[in-house]
Image (cartoon, rainbow, N blue to C red):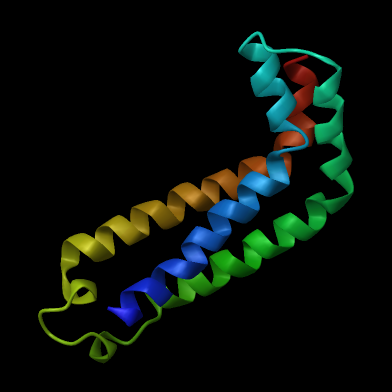
Length: 117
């Protein structure tokens, strides 16, 4: 049970870091598209200086998740455990690639944002 939780930790860390990295740019755009506005949205721009750190944390978390998903030895899973099931591995791989796409979008969004404003 502990092995499955630690295997999920880098993937969850990547998601959190990707969301944190995109708060300064994507957050205000999403709120404006939803019709929510106000001067308080400018406070989200205060996170812009931290964006490279969040992206770095997301890339590091994705590296550890990739290593755990694709490079983990098959002998590490005991037969009958959750990590030995092919469905679980497939779900982890799909989630990994979804998070990877989110991180890439967070990296290129500042260059795409002027197209939406």
